[in-house]
Image 1 (cartoon, rainbow, N blue to C red):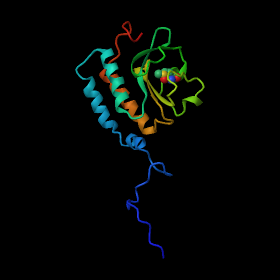
Image 2 (tube, helix red, strand yellow):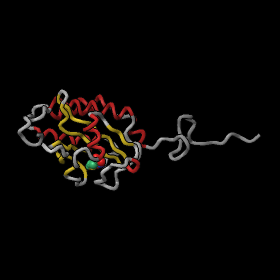
Image 3 (tube, protein in one colour):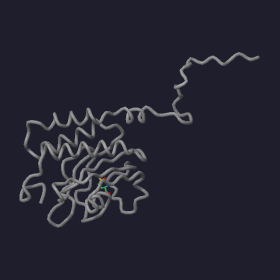
Length: 191
Ligand code: SME
């Protein structure tokens, strides 16, 4: 009888990277991400400052740096014409103006609900600001019933935003909305 093969890994949970059913380090990083902790950090980050632009800029930067596998994170705000105009963000320079109702952002603002696109190439009206983006989540910004903008996150990976990420990111955006109330409509950046 042949001896059992000796491997350095007796732990049955070990799966070599790249094998069937294995998880990459990036995937494991995503799965261990604590949205509870991120939410507390967002509250802390935004506490003590009332300037909307400063808080929005820090929120976008925080999301961009703390969420793994993300290549863009930022705001678009509705102007009086219904276009979405670029706000504070982190990542490469982006399209400054999305025509009313257009793109994933416009669709999310119109539908008044979060849009998750697993493959932007398969979403006919996707507006490509960065060809590296493969998947996307867009969360509308609300005060009561009024949508005044969106928060958009792009990833270079397909299907980056799982249901737990959607729920977690919606919580982070809600925390932002509570901590950084929308400026008066006559003030920039909102209508
Ligand atoms: N992809 C977006 C446009 C904004 S950029 O991704 C930053 C869309 O289709 O709405």
